[in-house]
Length: 72
Image 1 (cartoon, rainbow, N blue to C red):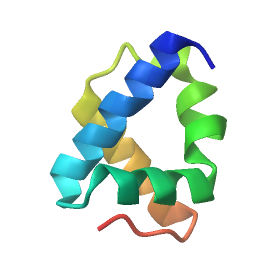
Image 2: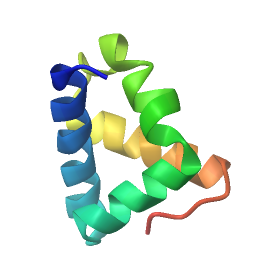
Image 3: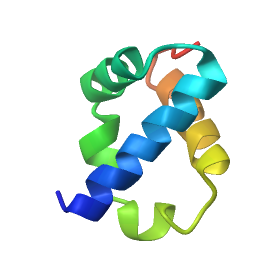
Image 4: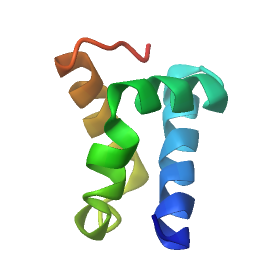
């Protein structure tokens, strides 16, 4: 993972934390356990970083729900 990917994933985690009212560490743990960080955010960084953080955060919430994980 590159520094840019790590910085971007950190921003997405922060946006999710603000949207859900959960701490960044809880969001990180849930995303990590669902495989979202490696398999989605890092793997699709080239495309995702062109979208707004709010859009990507909402997309991650939908993806988590689809996989049976809840962030809220």
